[in-house]
Length: 60
Image 1 (cartoon, one colour):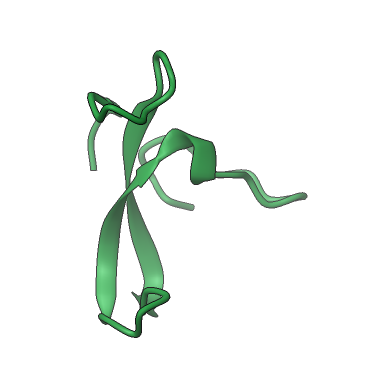
Image 2 (tube, rainbow, N blue to C red; image 1 turned 135 degrees about the horizontal axis):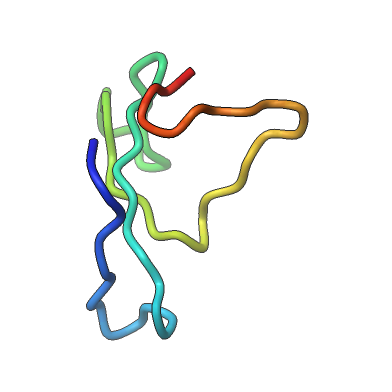
């Protein structure tokens, strides 16, 4: 989806980035809105899954 983008929001951490994430299956948010196929996520809310490696740019 492209390179991470700077997060210019007033509540962003210094140097925090935004990432586009494409979901394997459409997702709903906590308010029940959706389905969403992709989303822009703040870096602090992302984590890797243990034992899973993703090749950059491939999603696999």
